[in-house]
Length: 424
Image 1: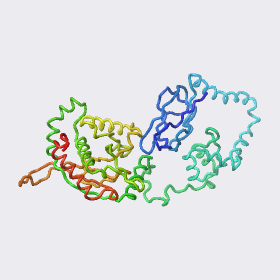
Image 2: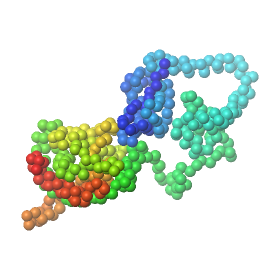
Image 3: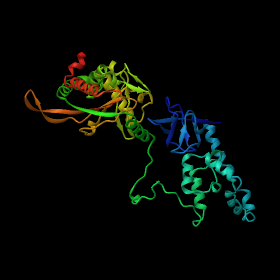
Image 4: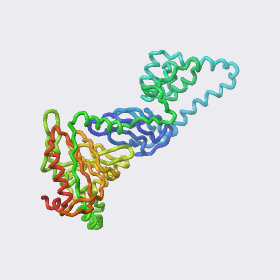
């Protein structure tokens, strides 16, 4: 008996996903827990594994198709019997050819009637078959203009596949073949032969929509300051080896900035709040999002209750979340619920930028490249390792005074890190 493999629960409020890639094909033998496909949600990529060992019967949906939670992805014939059953299924077609040789001369005209049977499909049934097919197939039908009744479905339950559409298209005489629709609404592009068109991933579309949402809904402003990194760099250089031996993690700058931000958030609660309808929600917990760039796009995993964690715990958590992000292994829970975000564009060489809010949060801190610059210190000009800091904030809830004071508090804690240790 074939076992259905369905789309698993993908997290709160996530109801659909895109089949990014199939890792197996029909007829393959699979083992329990073997990855079958990758599903891409708005936030993460999730692997779907086999629940039984056996043989892949079919793939119910194509790559690029949108699937709902609980929808059927494929079928597996469980056990060794499944593999054996797959071969007898192919045997019956071999049996009919035996009587065929004897009757081969007479049935010569028989193939002719078989070909016309393709267009004989009733229009209503043909349209229903196309409607039940995957989105990629339906899109190809629309682009090519092939008449549904000319398509002979070979997929499960009478569904048409892309191969069926192409077969129908190739069988139409060139003189009557419908003209394909232009790929882009603007018509042919002048230099299309030197361009590559790639469909946006679900993650990239989500990033684009959320950033645009932040611009459209928030009264977003950015304020700047600069911080002298001398003392933090000296402390890090002096203790980094001992820190790594004790905590098993490298001592970076991020833990200092997370702790400094928490000190500022406690003094200025609006920066840690959010607007919900006509209410302002002040959060007395500090779940700090840390922006991580990956090949798939920007993600913001969350360090939960960062105020209760030590420097070592924060560095280990950030390191673990960073590895998961790059491997595409982050869960939905690890990406949701942040109260404030820290983004470090300095790792890529950015000297200054205006970070965009991560809705529904009301503020985000942007770190930048450490650059030696001449500074006046004690009446003397000295070269100091300086970093520009930027805080973008939603002016609907955070006033300019609060944003500036928050950034000054972060600056004080970084320039004098003993304040973080003593809580002053």
